[in-house]
Length: 325
Ligand SMILES: [Zn+2]
View (cartoon, rainbow, N blue to C red):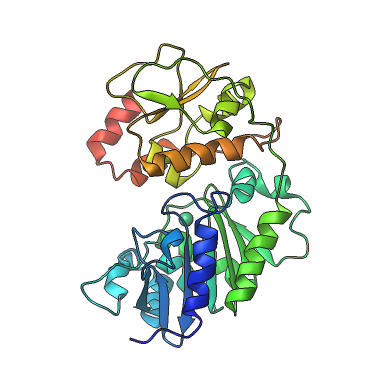
């Protein structure tokens, strides 16, 4: 299959956005471009940052996927069934989310500036007039996949091409790659809040097996209100997938053995396990980057235990144990 000529341009902006932790953390986010009845979308498990180093885009059957979302079929959450090349990479689990836009180019990011608002209990009030001039809308939280796509479709039908996804991120659409790139950056900038300082965060002597966490997360540990916000629960899906449910505070000395990938040490800083994954590092920094921009009077909305559980694919028994814990 021959990709459209501007796939190369999409790869270029994907690599740029994917390398910027203010837009994308780890393997999060995805981009796509439509070419007639074919949609080329980032493959599941690949990183946007790698878009210029390897083929990360796979073709899928656009009319069939759109049909499936419109009918509310469970199959819409099996994007590999819509892949037009067999045996290769699978289309992103968020393929349905891209298919519902009429525009050719769709960019989905976990923009830190957007997350500051998207994790608040009343994001519309928090955003206020910041997005005036954009055709924007917002959808409530749903697990990434077809259910979220169906909600986005309703807002798209009302004419929005900028959609804030509650407790998740941002998705924008345009007819050219350049317009989509400009739009995502304009929205990100319109939602910008300066962070509190994360420089010169004191580091303590950590036991073996622990190292200092990203500065922004350590800055959270120096502020009681931000520490309370961090430990209140999970704010968005990728945090749960890479760091587990929420965040935990612990005083020194830190425990060894089975622990979360990081601890917030109130009044001192934050520490990462030396064996924490690259994804855990990215999402730990993201939590710090979001909370160091959070207004002090903000009320946050956390994922419910059931929402955490479905992200972790817990079976009913594990879910029950967690409820009883
Ligand atoms: Zn996402």
